[in-house]
Image (cartoon, rainbow, N blue to C red; front, side, top):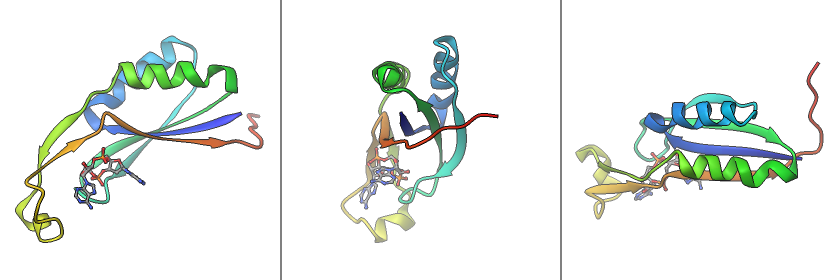
Length: 103
Ligand code: 2BA
């Protein structure tokens, strides 16, 4: 079993979740904040079996896209070279899951 943690742009979160539901996947979304931009993004948790992992990753890929954002002047103190940043379509962590229970 696998636990997928996918950090996506908040504008893409709903599309991902709806596509997951259409394909019969269960998920949880968390409202999160990026450490660099300090802006809201969405983290989607999906617990699934190994054989469905690829489908979940495909769904995330198909429903997200890169975003370009200007870096606020104050933040450029920490990263002077970055006037704008390219936010990847998704940052994904896949963890081995020991057990999963639903009562
Ligand atoms: P943020 O931390 O708000 O980062 C937004 C974008 O800013 C990043 O896009 C990257 O292009 C840029 N950025 C981040 N740190 C930077 C730095 N120190 N100097 C210059 N530019 C920087 P992504 O890399 O696609 O990341 C999108 C979001 O995914 C991040 O939002 C963060 O919430 C999450 N993330 C990315 N890598 C992560 C990691 N290794 N661990 C945990 N969360 C991560």
